[in-house]
Length: 135
Image 1 (cartoon, rainbow, N blue to C red):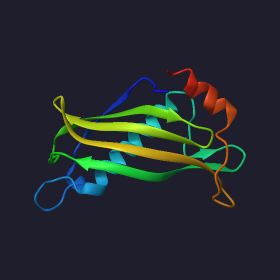
Image 2 (image 1 turned 90 degrees about the horizontal axis):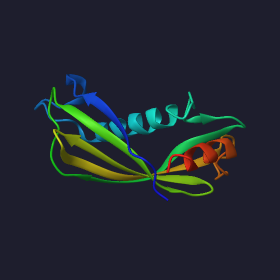
Image 3 (image 1 turned 60 degrees about the vertical axis):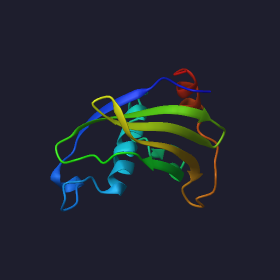
């Protein structure tokens, strides 16, 4: 199952870079997180990481390829697209582009867990239904 692509524009600020003006590698993951959060918000879920019934969305794994560096003051487009919706997790395919060129790509697995135990839990039906409708 694959969903429609969500895009978010982000400007690179000095706080995102190292002394050479190059975006620090972990900030690409932050940009991807923002895009996933805003994607979920577009479905009406205001606090996407914290769900009802004491459940959370947490990153299970990330496979990221850094293809070209982003630089201070670049305007980037960060995409989030649902690659797979399973009972307890979502796999996102994400890219970061600068002027149409993909400079970073990632596959991020986000799991739904019980807050108290941090063990896998079914994604709430309300969210599953909304996400299924995005394909």
